[in-house]
Amino acid sequence: MIRYIRRAAALCLLLLVALLVNAARLQIFAATELDENPANRRVAIGRYEEPRGNILVGGKRVTGSKDSGQQLRYERTYQQGPLYAPVTGYSSQTYGTTLLENAEDDILSGADPLLSPLPFWNDISRKQRPGGNVVTTIRPAMQRAAFDGLGGKRGAVAAIEPTTGKILALVSSPSYDPGLLSGTGLGVKTQWARLNASGTQPMLNRAIRQTYPPGSTFKIVTAAAALDAGLVRDVDAPTGTPDPYVLPGTRTTLPNAADGCENASLAYAIQWSCNTVMANLGVKLGMAGMLDAVNKFGFNDRRLRIPSGVAPSNFDTMMTVDQLALSSIGQFNTTATPLQMAMVSAAVANDGELKYPYLVDRVTTSGGRTVAQTHQRRYQRAMNPSTAQQLQRLMVTVVEEGTGSKAAIDGATVGGKTGTAQNGLGNSGTPYAWFISWAADQVGQPAVAVAVVVEDAEAVRGHISGGGAAAPIARAVMAAALRD
Image (cartoon, rainbow, N blue to C red; front, side):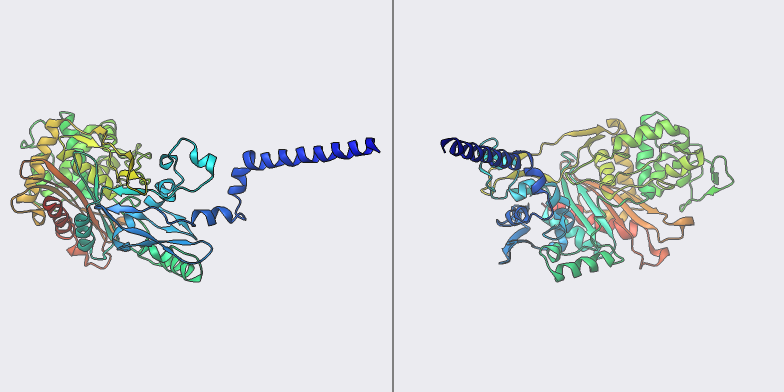
């Protein structure tokens, strides 16, 4: 009898060990797989059982959380949602997260170890910490000036503090209210379908995720390359460029919108945007010279994060000579985000030193204790200081005496460059209106660099110009920066 009892006890012990081993396997080795299983609702329930941390602009919350009373308890709310959507993105219980809501999700959801009182505390306790806060570099007055300036027209604005790389404004238009996507149910799905079906693409972040031909604003890059290489030693000396100028290897004549471009100086070519002079300089610099220059400004960089990912701005690495000529004036396959062109302007304003752009100043606990701070860092030296100082003078002339007069601000030093970029096959589309600029404060310190692009398909084609459509928006943003 005792023998059978022993056998039964041994069997029970074996079963107990098997249960313990399986429990350990589930908790240690299979935990991640089970957490990620779509059928597991516990992760989602846990994620939304506490309010999400907030995104702050100018020291004030632009996000919040509301108790829905549902199983997924707390839904995201947004204050002035369309104004800040290009910064925050959305946090949706149905469709996930984008932009800062995605890039800083671990902080906002409370999962980041930085928020723990002790190392590995979250893993040990398996307890959800309160979500932390993300403090942005955005200035409310500048964001509002850019948003109102675009007035719902398709386009974007990016503004940077040249000496630090802080992103001061980031606007994409038309925009949308991310709060419409926060919860679950038929209403959210209807809004998602409506937004995605819209021809104006309101959820597209045009400031960092859309690239455009930069047109004549790109001539600042070509001018910097020519000055750095010593191809131009005197900006006021004739360049020997013919007009008409025939693209090398073709019979195609490159037109100018301005008069007086034959044998014009670099200063005149920047002031009045002579295509022929800048295309000729690009050809003389050659493929290697232009690639070296564009890379210093950030073109072709697929790793740029702010911390959201930024679409790479493009300058082809293999071209024929005639294509190189067109690329050197911001056409052919050359494309750029508004953020990229703000970086170009910032490099000029900051004596050639380009800072890495960033959108998050710091992250904190829910109680406000800083757990991580973003420090400014150098991106690259885009050009020599002497080159930058010469370009500063040329860009000031564009505003004071040239095509960018609508960007002038009384009592301030403002430099700018207009651009009207061709669009579509054979220039069949409505051109894009560009303006890049910078403004210095009363002591000469560069306060802000701005890029504006307007793609207004409703406008009359002949009325579109960077100086007319985009420069007034840049002026409003710069004026707001100087007032702060």
